[in-house]
Image 1: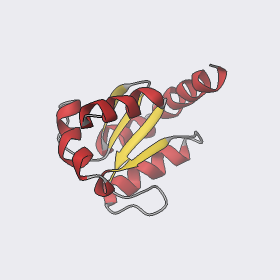
Image 2: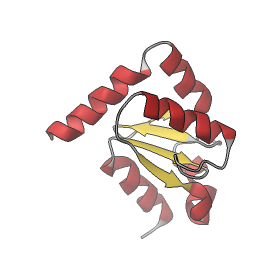
Image 3: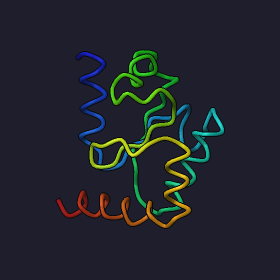
Image 4: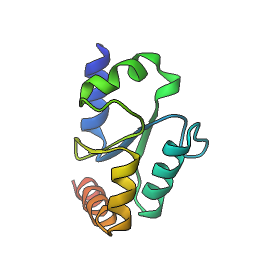
Length: 109
């Protein structure tokens, strides 16, 4: 499967996914760490992809949504942004309802 198809399949098959350096349990970058912490603070299940473990995704993800940096957070198949946008949405109280709605839709089918 082409790497762009793999990225698309990952984004579309998970209501919430973060492409990050490392894992939520062992982040390899401060921005990825803080973004994963914000997602965890929203008390929802989310998928993650360690871009450092997959060089093809690391090289091609910036082209997928025309977003040059990591981490990247996708909700319901759409890029919501990276570290700054995710943290800002969390601080404004906008992120948790968005994520809970996405997680709820997934749980309810």
